[in-house]
Length: 353
Image 1 (cartoon, one colour):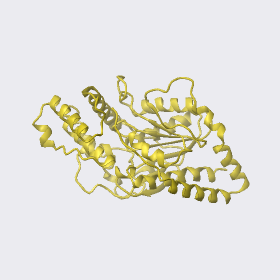
Image 2: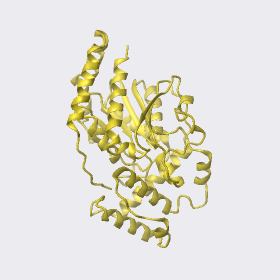
Image 3: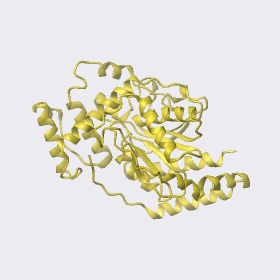
Image 4: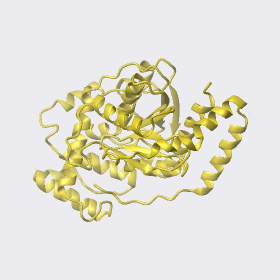
């Protein structure tokens, strides 16, 4: 399933950020400057040229650059198109790889276990970057997968540079779990299609104008046909999109939801950086929309660390960015997110001993 969009990089802002970073680096000690140069030197780009084709789960968003690559995991919907603006605003010298769900661009069955996803993605990271500290993150549902990846990579002997969780809680609230076990929850496509429509509007600013009543008076097959036509009408999907592709998207969406429901996180032996959105949703949303946003706060409502403090042996670093859970990745907020994520990555290098 392909979406069309255009992103322009503000080169003036990028140049200003580079000047700020250079000034900060000049104040480092000689030992720390040496460490920084080792991390940024061009040789680290060599492992980014695998001899075999990339698997369908790995997407090269920004391949070239001398910096250590950043690996970011998909949200509940399984796609990585949401990361393209972020990668662009992080600059042309920063390799950026996204992990998308198995079964989204191929006919393989989607994985239904976060541990299995983490194992697959960690294996691909080690193939592409066998040496050096690994920087990983994930947005929404992907934050949980990235958290599990960091654990598995550590067990394999890899060093984690930065683990960044983008606006995610470590678990599902009891009322959400209860709803996922209700009869027909996964069979009724209406709530899932409405969640996708909400996602499209929040990220790309394209309103599908689809209501539950519009879907309710149609059969399951007619709902899918109607949804595809609505997507085509706003020029967000290519003209040759098929119902088969939409069914794959729904299958991935539901499979990831099942994986989220069954995941039990364990304490992580390393620091966690949490980047959270400044605003919550002002409107009532369905459980599936909450699942897509991973922001039904539950018992974490008054916890600035969103519950991650219980799973880290070190204090959680908390970074706030403008926007809601969805719009933090949309312009203009994504420019702030890119700047602050880059600062987090530089800080990891600067404080290393």
